[in-house]
Length: 227
Image 1 (cartoon, rainbow, N blue to C red):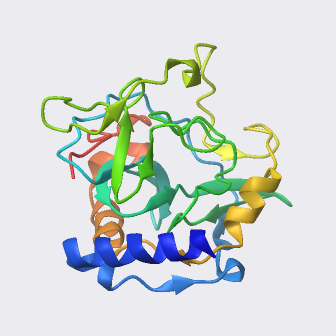
Image 2 (cartoon, rainbow, N blue to C red):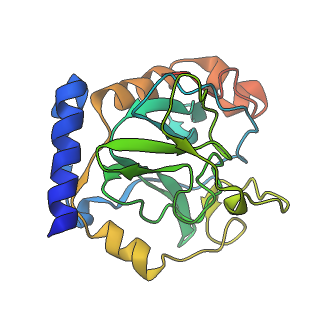
């Protein structure tokens, strides 16, 4: 009950400070399913540098490969306003690659075990945490100017110094991972779909050939945006 009240307070706070969040539509666990299926797997994740956090209350939403009429295109990572973001991911099963859309919620759920970096190491999220009504940033993995954003801390043990797997999908030939009990619990909580700004951001990239995997040799021109 306390978690639910806290989540509602976060949503109210965000809706007052950022208009697009007020238009978020809740989604049920049944709606967090495969949105599109294709026969060709997504390219490896590109390597890029996270832009500086623009200010307090911004959450990092990592970049990902989306699929359109002319194939895969890269949607840049960007700083957004929200509660906690569970990234979307591609999953391979039955000979098809299916897209599981990301969502906002009180906890980070399963995102295929994909190492998106910047706190999203494949399991959970270590880039920061909500402390009361403010978000605290882990500067060990997040690019934050402590002179501008005061609510910070350092947790270096979460950094993965092993060889990074750049695979961008879950399943055979990619990342082999299954949802843990806590991730399954997070998936059953009330969620909110991507904001209209996020959806517009993705749609715009589908028309930019410099983001196409086939045109850029899987090296998108804009791997990240500030916000």
